[in-house]
Image: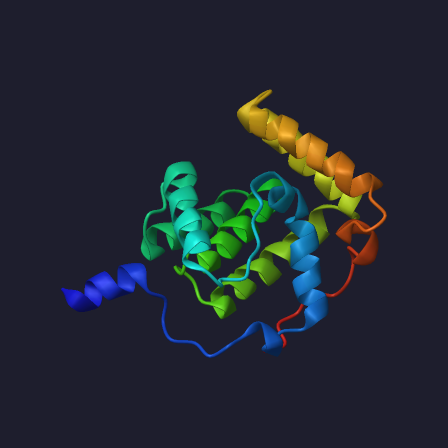
Length: 180
């Protein structure tokens, strides 16, 4: 029973750290998640209990993923439903990032999901601009004229127009690969 509870809550032991990962890849993932980060205020460094609690609450309330197995099921379902959907792949990266923040996934697991989903996004679209527009279009289709859509549109405009935007600092078409 204790092992089952631990499996549902805790990811397997893993020694991978941010220092072991190519900083360009991390910046690409941050750029891909920039709209979500602006809207939700997420920072994917698991460095305090508040962020872990916020991540777990968000996953449970927004995605019905209150445990590690439920989160993994959510991520897996995105890949099987529509592997070419920019929104689904962006959502997979979001879930992986927040899953890491919440303590449900290891950094390695979150990065594996992010690299695979990022490669699929690159096959579907050709730039940060096109990716952002596709993300907003799909969000509007699924949520209508929601508060989240309006906040995401404002965040996208901010990212497009800001001189220090990750969209301007990180090449969209860079090769995404696992280097760990």
